[in-house]
Image (cartoon, rainbow, N blue to C red; front, side, top):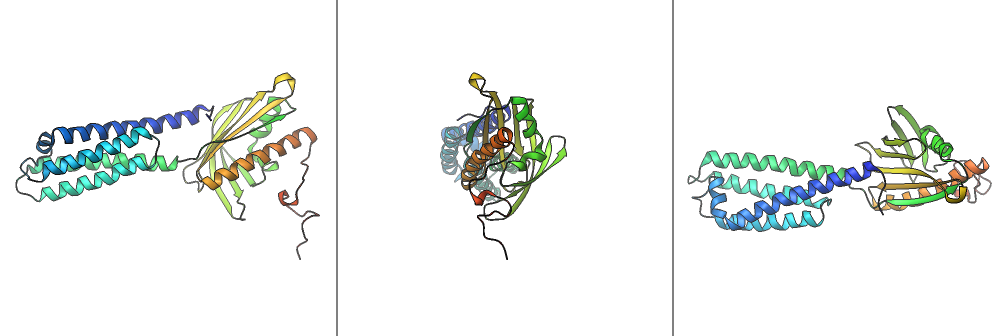
Length: 289
């Protein structure tokens, strides 16, 4: 299932491109260490150290396996951290041979600096990947007997979203396409986070994403399309969230929210069929003493 938002696609392409770049670097370095360990040993100033060539061949095999893994899954969270682990081993090895007298210390120190720099890039990729490690998108659709511009206006007024979003307690418009959300979880806890609208095509599409620091990172979009036969508007919601359980809840939430939005726009009120979906007192719910 593909997301239509350019923001979604750009983020995926950036992750994949970074993963493939790291993979290419790993494979290239690994082939050099396997095929020409003597040349690599001279480059790092350790050609006179007896254990260097066998160690470099082992490191080369590790680099190739890591690189192939990154090519196979360029958006994987594990790939960059596997490289960080390898960088730590490389630094430990270089630190060990730095104690030897049969080395070119200037080259070895330069190699240590180079590996440390690469490790920073790998760690950055790993952190970025973790922050964007969202699950597979969930998708829900409903047809509402209203025009796209009318539905767009109510969705774009973020402070009105709690009117039909069950778990959303409050949305505060912060200006500049940013908003602050208070969301109640099924266990009663309250989570808060900031979000930003990253794409706004009037009467057609709104895309958003949570800002860094959100306890449950998420992103999504809602698209408004004219329904065939003049039946109103087809509203399509697509969301991605970080945790598998959150994904399940997001799918059910989106379906219920769209049903409530349809009721609000077509009948002017929400028709409740179950006491459990009411926020306040309900005849089917026992009174509190």
